[in-house]
Picture 1 (tube, rainbow, N blue to C red):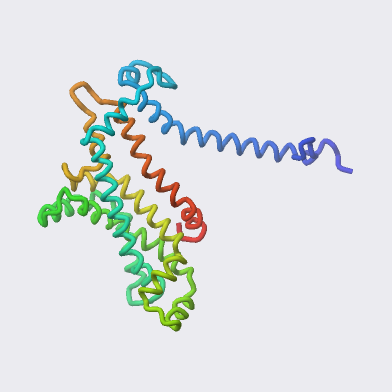
Picture 2 (picture 1 turned 180 degrees about the vertical axis):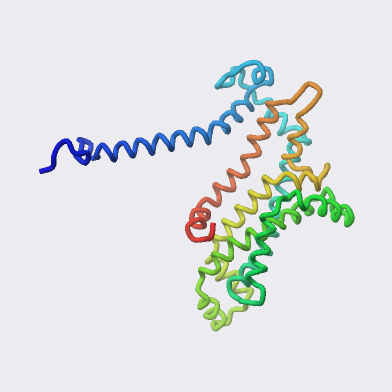
Amino acid sequence: MTDATTPDTLTAGGATPRRRIKVNTSAIVMGLYLLFLMLPLYWLLNMSLKTNTEILNDFTLFPRDLTFANYATILTDPAWYMGYVNSLIYVVMNTVISLLVALPAAYAFSRYHFMGDKHLFFWLLTNRMAPPAVFALPFFQLYSSVGLFDTHIAVALAHCLFNVPLAVWILEGFMRGVPKEIDETAYIDGYSFGKFFVKIFMPLIASGIGVAAFFCFMFSWVELLLSRTLTTVDAKPIAAIMTRTQGASGIDWGVLAAAGVLTIVPGALVIYFVRNYIAKGFALGRV
């Protein structure tokens, strides 16, 4: 018969005291982490619904005078909302170009062995390790010479330097997990390489394509240095436009906070639509 004083004695709820303490500790730690994670986002939303006077003069957990004027300023002023349009244009362009280049490259690395393949694969990854500041001046000089400065394609191509290696690295891991016998069976059945790759192979690595597209989109969306260096007016992204809130009267904190909230929205939407692919990708791929 079990002694009633042992720590493993069952309670009325069916759980031991030691297990209950462990569960409570985990819940507290998770709660503190979520609070730490969500507090800046809540404060950003809180500031975006306040006037500048309330932001600077009072410390309030909720807007005292709720206002949507800051969002109205961004959504009605072309100087503001065109920043979001410009950012979305070059980010989508970069994501498409990166995937179109990375898919055949990753297939070659996963299916064939050639001289220097491992060194080339490592060299691709070193481009991801280099800081953008290293390439800002060469890109600026090159694009100014060929007439691509202040265009969407200029920023999209510049971001390919970092996103293509990342996409190749992710996709190669997924492709290596697909048996080579599938390729051989498709060729025996009379499939051309293009038809096999699009209709058979790509659906098998759909999770990897979703993960690669997600990371390409997010890295291009949050990158500031190259996008700001290579644009001035026509293709200026929202991250660069947010610096214009500094004026003679000081910083327009409300508008700046509203712009920050709207900047988070595209990334959140991308995560929502590819959430199933991301879950599979983290379980099956290299990431």
